[in-house]
Length: 242
Length: 360
Image (cartoon, rainbow over the protein chains, first blue to last red):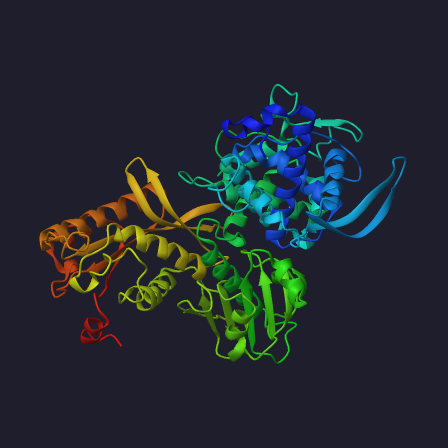
């Protein structure tokens, strides 16, 4: 469910913005977990799912898609979205996600963070039709056709990140060009597309991807999928070097 | 060879960018072919990497089975399979095992073969997995059997090579020879689109046979040269459209064009649907098409600073006249320095025609 209004979404008009935002967040979680399932990296630890959500946001402009959230609070432990976490847990209660290996992780000065592994609950009788409506099956049956493209992007990104050693997505996010920008200290907001007036300038990940073209021969167009795999390769190299 | 629009990105080095771009050739999946082809290429890359490393970590088992699974965990949990990730970078055994993997063969689930390899296809069908693409790898026979459309679909085979493939024109020709013999020679092997539906025996080509062959060869080259060469299609230049370009990493670790492959089809008649009369194509038109192919291959190669190949696919019913012996073609070749490497590949409208021509 994209952030933008659509003629297919008249029913949304009757819902308050806060309720719409919750629906969008749930839809985003389901799309992310579905992509992770297809990449074979589920059950996925919550910190990895947050990292995946962040990388999806910061790299969405590579496919000319809007970021779901154009900012992130930079934390030492890696990206974490409290709202997304809340909806992940609600989706467990709703029976659409399954949760295993729950535990609390102590964090210096920040209390504790819930960590668990999440996966789609294929036993849910509603799951298939919901995923279909979210564009995770085909364009034809998607509630909003743009969601199918978002899903394709997420599947490609999850596949690319799955090639990173041990699929260490949480570490991958911390070496991401935008997140690792040394000019921004921990506990500060990284704004790569929310309020910034120059999102291209502030999204170092996008600028990195755009710079790949400098190193390909004349006439070679790098496809959207190839860009994601190249970037994942760069993250893998950074993790290996680090 | 970075261009002049160089831009410094805080914290990102040029070496990182160069390495990332190089991954296009060295370890990137074939993102621009369909998932079953992508999977077959990925599995071949995986098992040949293992074979070329001496099959480290393997025991005495001979067969490994790989299944492209849309939701690997779902299938794996049902069957008691365990997680596996990045098998190309580990010594996790592959032989004697059944692997349910994603389309890049990078992650999924693995279990011991539940039945003998001979009974495996039937077993997959019993589990409701019969429609999924399957790749079976035989170490002793050094062969890979691909079933892209599932257990009931047609199979194709690839050799399992214990040595890395050299980047040389001779290898391109070997790849073309295998593709010709196994995928193009007769209508039963040909991908849909080379011949008009139900009209192969009349030697009536499909609407765009070159396009069909182009896509086929892209997959063939990416499979044959995985890790060493990347095959790309559809490069539009100011002087025309290149059919296939092969890229490699040069000694400075930069990506460069290595070979331009132009494709031409010569034919007896134009395309026509069932029930429609097909107009004939004269020998002189075919000769002109080949001359144009020579000019294009040479010009594109010059434009891209690469080597040139012209591959001609002969869909004519009467193949007695050799187009390459025609003076117009010789003259055209004489204008090129270096001369493009040219081959003619005969395609037959029926298996019996191929046999009569000496193919068996």
